[in-house]
Length: 174
Image (cartoon, rainbow, N blue to C red; front, side, top):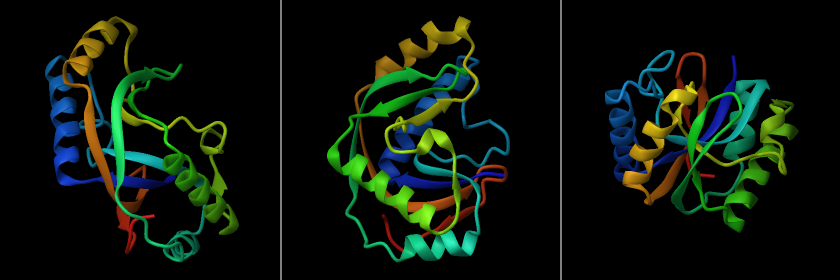
């Protein structure tokens, strides 16, 4: 089981991503809308933890200062080599600094960080379809580029158990 430290979106941005998920599903491309437990929410993952103590991670992150909402300019579509496709936010200093702070904080809690979330390896993204088939790439690209750009806003932080979708909201955004 993996615990993800996630930046969650405001209602308008969440709805825009869910509409895109629905458009992809209507084109027979499975998205996070129907993947695994079906409780996925649009998000940007700051860190994925392979082993952790939930209370330690939560206490460590709650000690960080509250951060203002984070504007995310989504104007790029990408894929990882294992078929996951996503939207990429413009990389800003604030985005990179916040992620590095989260990683440092969870590491000090004793959690084991997944290697793809180490600063310098992390690729910021908002997942659309976790298992994109190459034959669907043109369809997905056409649907995605039809709605880009999306101006999203990250407004809250939650710890999410990726195997169940259980959410543990933090008291303030980090």
